[in-house]
Length: 235
View 1 (cartoon, rainbow, N blue to C red):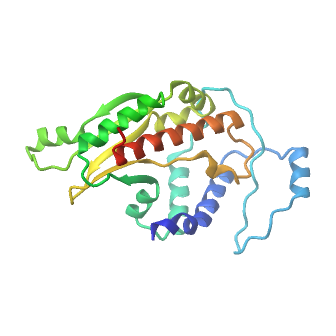
View 2 (view 1 turned 90 degrees about the vertical axis):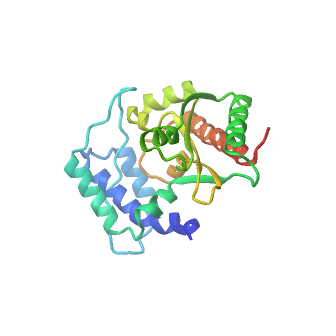
């Protein structure tokens, strides 16, 4: 079912994102953009919603924060988007995750060791480790708590370029991979799925450069290789 969720949610999300763009300070459309708009008119929407105009190209100083959005504007945006959203919070979180089940017979530590080996092989640095389940056991005394650990990986130079483009990108860095044990004692490897290729059809001109786009894709694919190696127990 969840395989089709992304396509079903695309329209309401697109509308909501466009509404947010419209809510931000508008700038005059340049003559060049006007010509582009006239030359390639957008096809009619299949539903009766007036789409706000695309924002023009903008300039900004690298490594600076974007203009803040008020809590009220943010709440209004989310509320508007949720009004058209048929999914539960559980569905939405699952939609944002890419996950792989570990091969039968692999232990938790086997998965972790295989991930570390693959990261080292592709020259991707392991920069952090948090065994959350140990804290839960220490606080609760419940030694039967499911095991969950977080591993953070990073390519420092790509991270630096992403921060220059959007300092707010710090909330996604470094890339985090979780290894968890579910209620059936099955081991899973998962991470937040973000892919700059999702924006390829976005008409907003304020995109990442082609060079940074390729580096971002490489980072995502590197994390995916690390996760698949762990799930398969590749030593």
